[in-house]
Image (cartoon, rainbow, N blue to C red; front, side, top):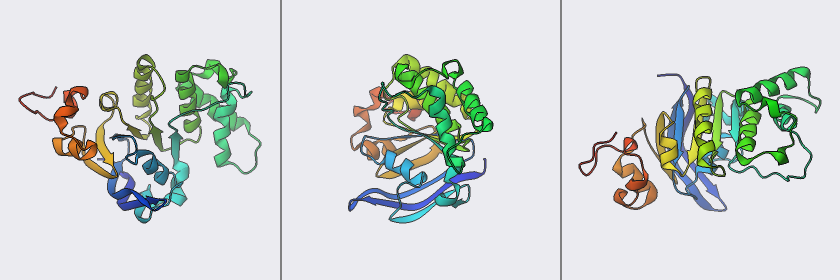
Length: 255
């Protein structure tokens, strides 16, 4: 088991007086690929924003690589849920990626090293040949790869992804998850999604989230975890879930 890179104890988060996360406890080890599934509105995006230091907990402790979020959030890369671009806005692929380097700089001038790092990130996601293309000319799948490159340009130890394939077709999604599997050899990944079937094929461990977190450091989800998360009997949703993420149930042996 690798060293701990994220430690969360008794996390509670309130937004506008409403509790959106309660009693969340989680330990993530280095080079894990954790998938967090759950219904829309279950607090998954808020959870990522806590890790990024954008939302302050009402109570509880969050540590990144052994230190408070404020000290080590520069070790995190983030791919947001939706990329909204004005297609007429004149910004190139390279400009989008190198802009991430501002977080590591004082001032707004980019060095040759910044451009080298941006080019390396684009190469990792197979988008370097399009470095001069305008963002507005890209497909949804291409834009998503550019956003991953932008996150990689900060040279993170941990990559957070919020519904990264929500706006792309299934053909693109499969290749995208293969890219994430490659990146996982070098860094820890946390991916949140409401799509159990897509995520379960690629992650190393699975958790469920709906206000609180259900996690057993395994790729297998038990009946109680799913029913607590989705508030309905597992039989109603099991047909949409590959049996590999469920233990044997109702006489069916998981594959």
